[in-house]
Image (cartoon, rainbow over all chains, first blue to last red; front, side, top):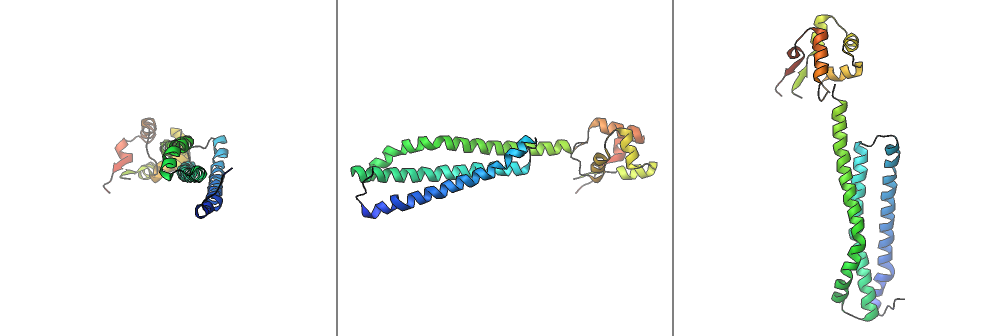
Length: 136
Length: 68
């Protein structure tokens, strides 16, 4: 259990960070709802549409934003935890936790990049399909 | 697009309807309409050959380049 010795900083841990986390979770849920629209089109074989490309791009960009923000939030959270618990310097905890927190977010970043690549492929596919359909 | 399709002129010269030409060359009327309206992105040599054969004309009679 955390011991909040510093009164000035504890409100950040107690209120701001959970609030930001909830907002970000809501954001990721909204992205998932957006992504849900793609599934029926995959079933009906209408994958190469501009709409799908836009959804993939938006979800990819959203995941990048989410992973970057959640990275900083977790980093700050961990720094506060250790600084308050063991009364060590913030720079020490920052360097100590940087790798740990980063490794947890890398997979999300990779997924986001893949989604952006898929968005680009769908866009290219849409253009090729359009061209093929208009070849008489 | 700078390539113009003069199919309408050739058709009227031959007193042919789009439907008849579509049947002769074996494409749908919708596709022929796309070709006539200039919305087509490309035309296959086989289609061009069929049109030329049906209308007894040269490709240049159907297609023309117009500077934009």
